[in-house]
Amino acid sequence: MNSFEIIIQNIKNLQTLPTIYTSISEALENPFVTPQKLAQIISIDQVSSVKILKVANSPFYGFRGRIDTISQAILYLGFDEIKSIIFALSVVNIFTKDKVILNFKPRDLWAHSIAVGIATRLIGSALGERELENYFLAGIIHDIGKLLFIEFMPNDYKKVLQVVKEKNCYIKDAEIEILGIDHCMAGQILAEKWKLPLALQDAILLHHTGIKASQTSKITASVHVADILATALDLGKTGDNIIPEPNFKVWEIIKLPKGFFLSIRKKLIDDFNQTIRLMLTE
Amino acid sequence: MQKFITVKEIKEGMELAVPVRNKFNQVLLAEDIKLEERHKNILLFWGVQGIYVKDSEGKTESQYDEAEILIAKDELKKRLKWNFRNFNEEEIYNLALSELLLKKMK
Image (cartoon, rainbow over all chains, first blue to last red):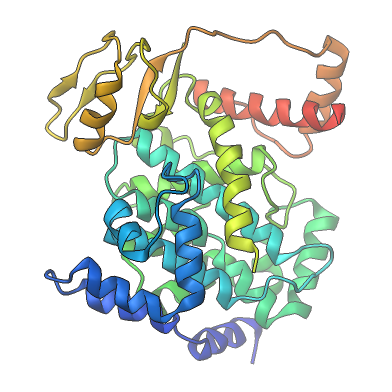
């Protein structure tokens, strides 16, 4: 089997998302589901319940210390936001965070992904978008393909990182050279297996180009720009040392006013520091 | 200058820099309006999470001398191999440069 076939096989065998996430997704398909029913499902998983309360009370949402129960968290944040928090926490827990390959740590990659999630959400908010939880999630999972490589092909990925070091090239190009598949494609295949919304699958597949040939997606364009911004601010690590060039066409899709990036810098860094503490500590 | 803030960060007297519109493009709050505490609840009720307000603080003076900036720019070229083409890209470039200068200071 070549690298491409190995990774596809491993994605097929990879565990599904944790029960709590699938149970909540199923419950939310019923339009008459009550917050109490949802709270009941979440409360079965003690670890997730505690984490949700921590996240809900973080400065990220601005309700600091006022949310005491899961039911309250659902009422304040809404069904979709709670689902998004559970998804983000579940995905972080599926992959190992402590495997180190040539100084590249999954923990640092998660830190980068969290920064991209927060920045994508800030961009979505500035664009007046409503489904901000999808913006956050798209950013969180955009590099999930790299975690698959680290998890299942650590030796081959070591070669990828060596090529990056020698050539100072994009990690995406080194992945194609060594593995025959890049993290965008691998991540999209996993997202498809997990039946994530198409908007999220596109954001994973196209975050380096920022656009889709047939149609424009604000989420994909936002992740593309947020990825560049987080790299420019050195929030977490991506595996290469390059600040990618924005695709000029994204500025037609997401029109951000002068001063936008300078104005969100402080909020992005503050929220980043809070969120990595919440999401990356056991 | 204008800056983006979340609704919770609104303070009395701030001035709206960009009108708040609904999805039908109707103006809900006009530009230049002076914001009050009550606007927080109104905006949240409308589902608005963030707004642009006028930034009276303006730019801060550079804390670095020309030589330091030139060295940092040279170093940044190894990581950032493109030229900015609009104000959005210029801001990203400047943020990367400031980050590098800040790291050097530490």
